[in-house]
Image 1: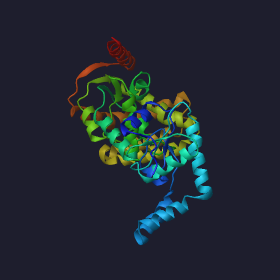
Image 2: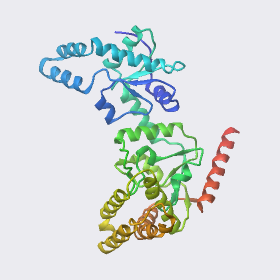
Image 3: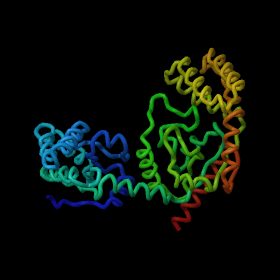
Image 4: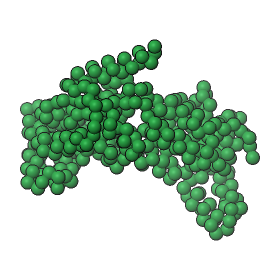
Length: 368
């Protein structure tokens, strides 16, 4: 078998995380990739899901030699040529960087792939211990993050908008493709599988500097779960808290969750139905009477044009009510369970100024 160069998983993980100018080819099947993968990797399988199924079946019934023979037969002719062409094209697309290739454990599939790339006159490093090795590095990054600050504030305080004004932040909601809360699902985007979410988090943490900021979240962001060890770091982390009146928060939510999708082409009845569904989901926590109350106000508001400022109050009334009767109580309760040192409290702009200053100071100290 070949003796082409390999790269330790730790080095591969840092290359992959710090640099999207490197061609990284994942030769596992589509199904394996869908379950768990890394950002900035290209899935060009050596064996498709269907191939793997057939080879596995042959292995069970006829043994490993027959399975190997079938594997070689399946990966031949036009299929093989097309696949090698795709690998080579992606390697050539980033000529300044060494390319990487890996399979599940750095075994047969990536060795074969590497061999074929070399036969075509190109170089590629095989990642030692494959996806499993990279995953091991990802879990290490999650368990040992740089020191960070949590940005807190009740629902609608504009926390996400604020962290995006900073130089150093990790946006957990963006990684999870979900805005937290019962209303957080995006209509047109699905959430990543759990392992992929964790890998994305690890890659973000790898790139980040000390004193970065992340939003206060509950342990679950939609169906993505913030890894326990990482969440355990969030609980006592120092915090900056935005203080914003409920009406202003209601306006923020109205703009983001109703006006923006409506302006983007979503029909009001569709928006109304999704809000009504989400309010219904928290009926037990709201209480039946309050739930019916909010749903009535909600359905009345959606009679009006959401982009006409004259009707904004009809929307703001039920949103504010939902905040004060449900979200704020939840938030106060969850804060009471955490023993955090408060570094600063103030308006959105004051919190932004404070965090910008403190990140600048941290970096001046590092530069010294």
